[in-house]
Image 1 (cartoon, rainbow, N blue to C red):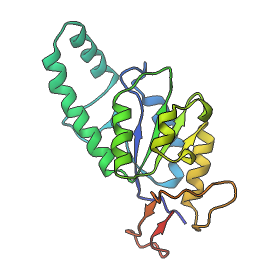
Image 2 (cartoon, rainbow, N blue to C red):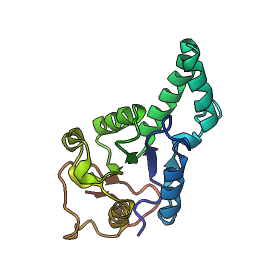
Image 3 (cartoon, rainbow, N blue to C red):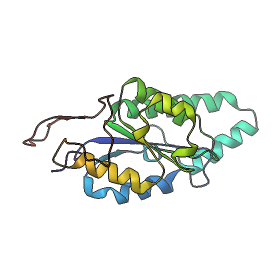
Image 4 (cartoon, helix red, strand yellow):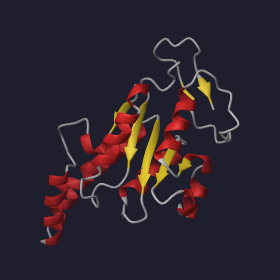
Length: 193
């Protein structure tokens, strides 16, 4: 069974402070998880022609900031923020990339927004779970913080399977954030974990 088929996943992580505009890890994880048939909500490829957030856009915004054109920055960033938070709201779950060496502000707001909605938030912390900020452990179940992409992929493979029984290798958690509904004719209906 493919429980995650047609679910929507928002890919949260730094954009402004990344040389590639945050595209490489997003493209990598979409390719690795292609077999799950997830609908990706990628802020680097916003599903609108109204606003974009490309590396070129970032360069122009940084030039505006250096020249003190703060009104122009606000006029653009207010819409970037609105679109991204709307995508978070539409998502069934989030995959987040955090790296202590790459500052980010928007990602923290996106995690907070999703946490208030009790969505599953899967965080890959670049320096490993043992280095993850303590605050994260108070926000989300620690079983949702991963040291590697492989661990995160294994977890999603488990969620995608037929059974709701939790194997020994995955600790169940009580926040009950996964709600996978049968909108597309799946026979097993909803699974809540």
